[in-house]
Length: 354
Image 1 (cartoon, one colour):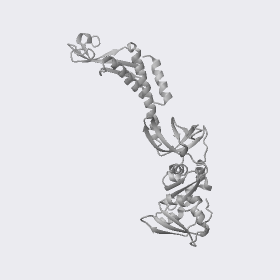
Image 2 (cartoon, rainbow, N blue to C red; image 1 turned 90 degrees about the vertical axis):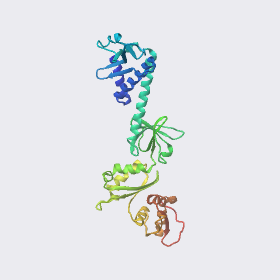
Image 3 (cartoon, one colour; image 1 turned 60 degrees about the horizontal axis):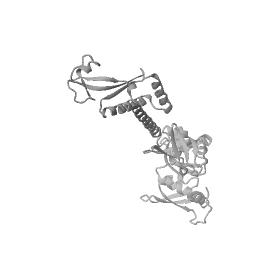
Image 4 (cartoon, rainbow, N blue to C red; image 1 turned 90 degrees about the horizontal axis):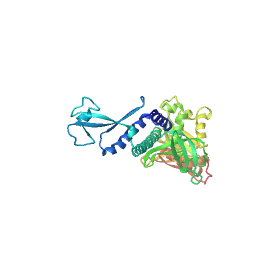
């Protein structure tokens, strides 16, 4: 086999990002499969490829016998001496196959199997690429946006993934060439190959962005306990630190709001409330209703996780939020049913605020 063959395989491996050793293994297996058909599919064909020495050897393994019972698998002692001078009955000898003798059909068969091997390797690499970032954020490049569906095709490393319009932040407009942060929700193997479920609306995106921007979170000093999100509009996160000297909320906000500001920018201006987590339900619920002030929280049923919250009359609309969003996000964040009431006890249908 000439040098061109080995150079071509090495170039293919580099182009596809596939280990050359993997390709040579597939080529070896392909050639064995192809040549075996010439011998009734019997396991007497073997192949050794040495990329360093640029050698490819195909050979048959035959039993040395006094009398032939299988012409494909047996060889007489006299004939065996041509390949091994001291061969005797009972030995197994290797007989070289001249690759030039391989017909076009065999070569095409091998080529097909090699091509399939490359596809398998690419699928394996894509799966590995996605699996290594499962439930993490990655930077992706927008390569195409379907004008009808709004679905965007993204390039993630060497792999491709589709970001459905439903998983894009409401109001954002993506363009070819944009670099965006996405969250890999899950990775699955399908008949068409590996598929990554990616999102820009998942709460996990906010969690991972804060882990990236806040050193105290990445080193474990500050912990994000809960996240509730309505993508494109508002997110609430509850943070906690076991170190009493650490201001968990302040660490996430950063100097002059730089850290939370960076996350807000990456989320197209989405509002973010950062509140302190507490094991005390009343304290946690009161904090979760920020930016509204809370007078008190009455726990109605710990079993059903229901409570009544009293707020100043002037804070009622703020506590409820625009279309009930603030109360809804606080309920998701804490896991409690929250009944918000004004201090006076009278509702006056206040205009809801953001």
